[in-house]
Structure formats: C-alpha cells, structure tokens
Image (cartoon, rainbow over the protein chains, first blue to last red):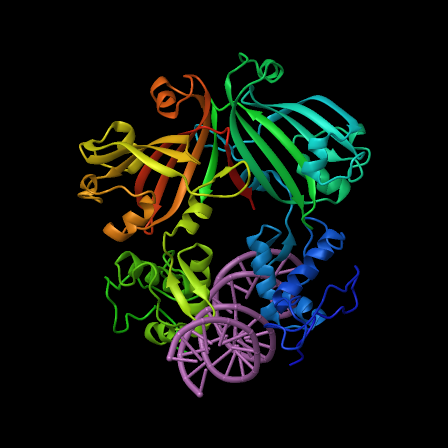
Length: 265
Length: 265
DNA sequence: TAGTGGTCTAGACCACGAC
DNA sequence: TCGTGGTCTAGACCACTAC
C-alpha cells in the first residue's frame, strides 16, 4: 500500500529524479508540482524512450514487470501505457506485448501526411532532392526552432511526386547540432525514419499552419506550373518526444490531384 | 458475477435492444457481433442522447446509478464515460457530475473552427446571411448528404467577418427533412447550437477536405477581393451522434489575416 | 503451456463542489 | 456533511501469441 513517488528502482538510467509527491493532489505542503501516479509512470517511460533505453520497434517490459520495478500496481502502469498508446507513442498487441512505436510508412501516412489523392487511396509520394546544405540559421529559422542567434541549420529542398506528377516542393530546416553529418547522408523518402534510426530522435507530434497563396516563380518552376497558380502553403513544426522543436518544414502543394484531409473529432 | 448483455433495467427508454453477447469475445457461436461491455454501455448512453433522454448541458446520472441500472460495475461505466469524454460527447467535472456536451462557443472554437487569426488568439467571426432558401437537392448534395434523388435541402449562403473584414463566404446544405422550418428562423452565428436547441441534432464529428483555388468572380465579390485571388476551399461534412451526415458546408476562405491550424497528434 | 495484453469487478481513499 | 468524479489497488477470467 506504499504510495508516493515512482521508485527509481534499479534501471534508473536517466536523472531518474523527476518523481515527486503523492497521488491525487498534494496533501502535504507541496503546492503545485504534483501529478497523478500514472502520469509519473508515463513520464518515466517517455524519459527512457528519449534516452534510448528501448529503441523503436522493441518491446517494453510487461505490465507486471514495470509495475514491480516502479513500485505501483499493474492498473496504474496500464493506465499510463493506454495513454501512451492513444498518443501513438507505443503500440499494444494482445498476446505479444507493448512496443515502442516506429515511424513506418503506415504511421507517417495516417498521422503525419494529410494530403490524400482525390481517389481517397492514401499513398506515399516519391521524393527528389533539389539541394541540401548547411547555413547560419535565418531569423525565421531561429524563431521557429527556438535556436539562439548564430546557430547553424541543415537545409533540404526537395520535390515530391504523386504518380509521377509533381505534388509539392518543400524546404526543411533542422538544427545542425541535433543532426550532425546529415548533409553527407543519402536522404530517404521517409525522413522521420532516418531521424529515428540515425539520431535517435523521434518526431512525436507536429503542428501545421495552412494558407492559400499564389505560387512564386521558383516554386512554380519546380512544380511545372505557371507562376501565380493557387497553392496550399503548409508550415509544419515537428516536436520530439520531449517537446523540443526539431524540424521546420514549409511545403507548397498543388491541390489538383489531392486534398488536405482533416478530421474534426 | 453476472456477465452478459447490458440490462434494459427500468428506464430502457429507446428500443433498448441493441444489447448483445458477452464480454471479451464471443465464447459462444455468436461469430462477430460482440462488443466489450463498456462499449455496449457507451452505445446505450449515446442512443439515449440521440433520443433526447438527456439534453445538452444536463447531467447524466452518477456512475453508481448508471452501474446499478445497467447491471455492470462502476469501473465499466467509468471506462465508457471516459471514452465519451475523449470524444467530446460529455464533459466530466470532479465534484459536480458528468454532463452532455454543449455546442457552446468554446467547443466550436476549438473543435470545429480551425481558422486562427495570425496573432494566435482564437475568436469567433461575425456572420452575415446573403441568402437562405429551399430547393431540390443537386446531385452533389445528394452524394454528400447521402440523400435519395428528389430530396429537398435548405441552402444558406453567408459571409463571415473577422474584426470587420471579410474572412470567408460559405454555402451550407442541410436535409430539409431533418430541419423543417429552418428557413423561417433567424440564423444565429453559432449554427450548431441552433441545430441542437431547435432540432435535437448534435454535430458530433466532421471531416474537412482542403484545397487551394482561385476565387471565382461571385465569391471574390462577396469577399471584396479581386477574382482569381488564391483562397482556401474547405469542404466540410458534419455527422450527427449516430454518424448520419447532417450538414454539408463549402467555405471559401481568405488566408491573409488567418490560417488553418491543424495538430498532428 | 506459459505469458501477454484486454476486460471486468470490488473496494479503498482522495479532492472538489454544493449544501 | 454528503455525493461526485479522480486515483489507486488487487484479483479474476478471457483471448491471443509464441513455444
């Protein structure tokens, strides 16, 4: 019946010290900093994922093992894991176990890629890199990625094609400090998989701002349309597991053959 | 330790007969039609909301009361209600109770209105109705709203303004059978509130398709911009609690002063 | 057969809100 | 003070997967 903070146990890899307080709400003079136990468990597990204790695709310990190690009941671990499953951080499969979510094509297609062909059949567009390089971050990049002035970024510009026809042209900016050597790598179609595999960085969440604009001359040329053609401008900021902005992506999309699909739930 | 279907109890207002089978998965020869108990409870409660047993804003019976009435444990009712809260169908407040969600301005603003002014401060645009009337449904309207040919619809066309400047012009189509007499009513800014209050119809979910287009002459005139100005075309279909399409709304939006905000979670 | 997550139950204590 | 939902626990049985 021990209540209180989540135990550090044996495998307390990280600082292992974000644990605090009691369940419910602080009965002692703590004031504000308390969280329910299941949320402390969740945060502990996410911290371990950030620290690479379990890689994407790998199984977590079973509910019973985690409960024993952390000194809480199975039900509390279960509630933490259910919440993480709802956030697409883990995948649970009856009879098999709970696994760290991977950035496979299906996940990208349903969670992060909202452009759907008019026929309704989701598919992944091909990519063609136009340029890649390093530079000092612009003021806009510093603001978007929360960088100090003078930081350096990696910039990638590429065209993506659907069924062979240009769909969008986009420019990505990434903090070079987080992605060293990226410019020397082959750039795959699925970038999030690369971030995860090479740098241990998981894009867990993104925020997109959309506007309709007239395509500027250079983008129009890359897309093979007349300058001034109406296009969808998508400004996306991707956040890592620990809520740090890690990728800024500005895409200019043609919406003749596809549309942006948004579910208001 | 009774297991099985959700009891009809005493207050089985509706058909009260969608109950089936056992928890887990059909151990008998049922085949496929089974659902977990907590989902049967959820469906029962939604059915009652559809039938108007509880109006928006009203409290549901307490967990204990529902559990006793339906013949399940409090934990099962709790799981059903938690799921409904996650879907924005009910609002739970500690110490007060569980309430049927209302279409108040806040909910609309966060769940259904994704256009955010560039300053980031969400606010509700004013409306000005341009026309309202009844007509035989077009082929497109029949397809969108799942109507039989020959059905009649109510059409509303209006402009919406943000801080006094035109933001969008939109055309709504509604099945007249579901909204009799709508054309004789005053059209408020918050239409979903009207659907709920006057017709007992709750828009629980919507699906939006976005494209970038050049504004046609008539829409451009209504918005006070030059024809051909790039604009965001939003095609929205709204679904009721029981998953029936009840409103088709096509909006043409200027995105100079605002953007469409989408969270990829 | 053993172990996993999925479901269901029962009961405890807590914070919150209305009285 | 009482009733509400929020949290936590403990234990049962189930279906699914791997061995």
